[in-house]
Each structure stands twice: as C-alpha cells, then as structure tokens.
Image (cartoon, rainbow, N blue to C red; front, side, top):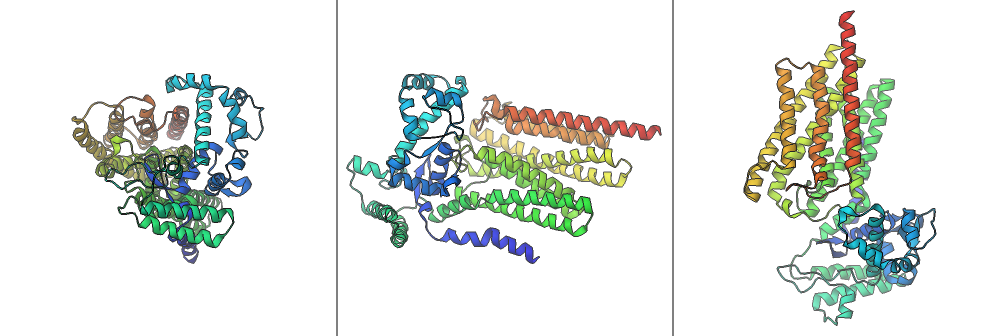
Length: 543
C-alpha cells in the first residue's frame, strides 16, 4: 500500500507543483482558432518541421528552440531542423541525400524557389489526386513559409486585439511595428513584459527573466474580459511536459510483464502487484482525460484521437471490474493488452499535431457530446471488451476443453459484458437519432455512420438471441463476439474512409491499410481458433 501511495505522489502531486507558477511556456497565443500556451504552439510546429516535439540531440525543448529562433534568426536558419525522409523530395530541391534526413532553412529555400511553377501546379490540383511526392513537397514549402514567419514574430499572435464580444483575431508583435498600431494600456504591458523577457534571455539574466514573467502574468490579468483561463494554460503546458499517457502506457506494459511472471511462477502476490500497476496506469490515464476535459471544457470524445483515449479508458474500466470480481488475471490481461494497443493507436494520431484542436461544426454541442457521443463510445468500448473475452474463450476452449467450470465462468463474463455493450450501443444510437432530428430535421437517413451503429446493435441482438434460443453454443457465441470487433472497427474508423455522409468528419483517410490488416487478422485468428476448438470438441465426443 505504501508503494502504491508513493507512486501516486510521484505521478501526480510533485509534477503538479510546477503548474502553479507562470512560465514562458504558459504565454497565451492564438493559433488554429483557439488560445493555447506557447509550449503547445512550439511543440506542434517543431513536430511539423523536425518530426519530434523536442530536440533530444541538443537537449532542447520546443519552447527553447522557438525562443532561440526568435532571438537569433540567422543562426536558426542554419540549424538542420527540417526532416525530409523522401529522397525524391530532396533531389527535387537540388540537395544531396543525407542519412540523418535533416536540412536547414538556408539549404532548402533556394531549391524551393526553383520549383515555384511546380508547386503552383501541385497547389492547383485536388488534394485527393496528389501523389505522395507532391504532398510532401507542398508540405515542405508550407513549413518553410511558417518557419520564416515564426522567426520574425509574424505568425505569433500574442497580443489580444481590442476587446469585443466577437473575440477578434489577435495581433503579432511584428504587426504593431509594420502597421504602426498604437497599443492600448494592457497591450503596452504585454509588449513591455515580452520585450523585457527576450532582452534578459539574451543576457542570461535569470532574475530579470523571472520578474518579467511575473509582469507578463499581471498584464494578462489586466485584460478587461475573460478571453482565456490562465490556469488552463498552465494545466495544458503541464500535461504536455508530463506525458501522462506515456506514463499510463508504461504501467500497462509493466503490469502485463508481471502478470506473465505470475502465470509462470503461480506466486499469488505477483498478480496483486500486476493489478496495482494496472490501477496506477488507469489513474494516470483517467487524470489525463480529466485534464483535457477541463482545458477544452467539453467531453473527451470530440475527435478520433480523443475517442481512442476514451474507448481505451472504458476497456480498462471494465477490465478492472472484471479482475476485481474474478481475481484470476483475466481482467489484468484484457486491460494491459487493450490499454497498450489503444495507446499506440492514439500516439499515431497524436503525431499529426495539436490533439486539443477545435471541434468540427457538426460536433459543436456539449450536450450531445456528453450524451450521444459519450454513450455510443462507451458502447464501442464495452463491445471490444466482449470481443477480447471472446478471443480468450476460443483460446481457452482449445487449451482447457475439459475444465467446464472455468470455461463457463469466462462465458458468463463475456455474456454480461455483451449485454452492457448492447445497452450503450442501442441507447447511443437512439440518442443520435434525436440529435439528427434536431440538427438535420430527420431521425434517420441511412448515413454510413448510422448504418454502422445499427449493424453493431443488430449483430449483438442476433448473437444473444441465437444463444438464448440454443442455436449457438458458447464457442459459437465467442466467435460472434470476436467478429463483432470487425463491425465496431468499421463503424468507428471505416466510415471516415468513405468520405461521404454527414458523419464523415474528415478525421483521417490514412487508416485503410491498418484497418484491412486488422480485419484480416481477426478473420484468420477467430475462424482458425473456432475451427480448432470445434474439431477438438468432436474428437473428445468421439472418444
């Protein structure tokens, strides 16, 4: 118990102390339609340029990189910051291929200027007709322009404009100089504090740097209307730096390793340690989701990335409950595997940039996000848990076909979770129809997303009724729930690949390959284990 409490303190309480002091990473900046801390802004652009959110080779954080670039643009333009992994793109801008794939602004810019006509042709083409080379060359061109704007403070919208109810676009320090804008009282305070901080940073005067940040925070608090919450900016910066989801992933993997040791040695207390590690990972996971909800003031299911985090949260919640009642490692296994897999999927989407971006218009309703979207996402999570148990049942029915009591206990858990999944999926689908009626004037329109949710409900109803009527044996039910994972994946990810319908939010169109691999694996594994289990059962009956 003491070990458990100590880890909780290390994970949450100690790092949280830094959230109460205003740092340079907390400076608010308007970007992509929202107010975010400078730390997030720097991380996102460094990720776009460099491929990482820091420069570990130089032990340089994203915020330090950004400030160094602003203070010394000439040096920054010679720094190899652009990660180009396509040899075709490198040769097109007349550079030699480098094994580290890194190039500086001054190396890239001359070659891009020679490709102006090609870039215009690519820009005029529809996005879905561009080749990989064309997409990457155009992206490099956009990154070069952004880099130059950042280096001269052009794109850093740090200063709130004249306060109005419309929350007009903020102003960069460069625009004050270029357009001769006369700052008002709070704008003057912000500009003076910023100038003082940058000057003291050049001189490495840490005392003045600290006092100028205090002045900056005071200036922000002098703004007449609450355009943003400074505490939320601090929370977001802390969340960036702490990487709670990496912490939770580490505990999930460690939990699985200890569980494997428990299976090999049958030492009872190792299962308890594994369960405790799973719980700690779950707490870190939950705390990260709660912080995201506080920061964005919305439920945690508004983007595909957030839905992955939330579904994995639901999977862990069911797994922890299962383990609490079963105490045999089944719940730990499901939680550790499910949590790890979904975390890796989420990290893939996080690599695209800002994970706290603004909502698409169709989702801009906190009430329906908190009801329909949350409910249907809980249905996805419960369905996947039932599918995971189905996989385990197929494996165990082959390994321990004679242990009827053990197999029955697994089946009962699977059947119970399936009923919960059916409730949330059915209820969420009905709520979605009500939302559709209010938003679009019709309850049902046979949209691909609606069809996917309905298909999950119908499939689960069919499998449940087949079992209750005796048409499906436990192993048949397990196969049905294992294959249900395919339907969930198609309803969750697949409809966005179609790029049609009112529910196609354009989250991502690059998942087709992974989706087909998943479907192929599920079909081969589930049908293969089902065939072996049925064949094993026939052999037992014949003998």
